[in-house]
Length: 108
Image (cartoon, rainbow, N blue to C red; front, side, top):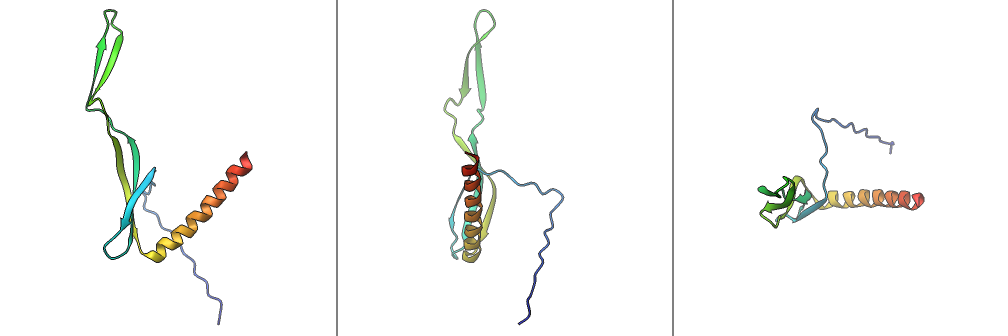
């Protein structure tokens, strides 16, 4: 059998700009595909802030409304893949993690 070669070229949209994700949430779809929704986690921005001033005109207290702010998980993107693709992604990620950990160990 003859050696075969496949060259894959990547094409990007002009507005290609990867999003930063701090985590992922997901599970299995009804047909068994793996679903990952990537999110960016941050503190919520208050609806309003009340600043009280003392007699000298300096801010003496700051209160947010609501006082207790929730954590926001803003979904930046999602991916659905079959089991074979998930296994390949796992192999690729594990390799990158090993490289990153070696880089950290060498830096110490």
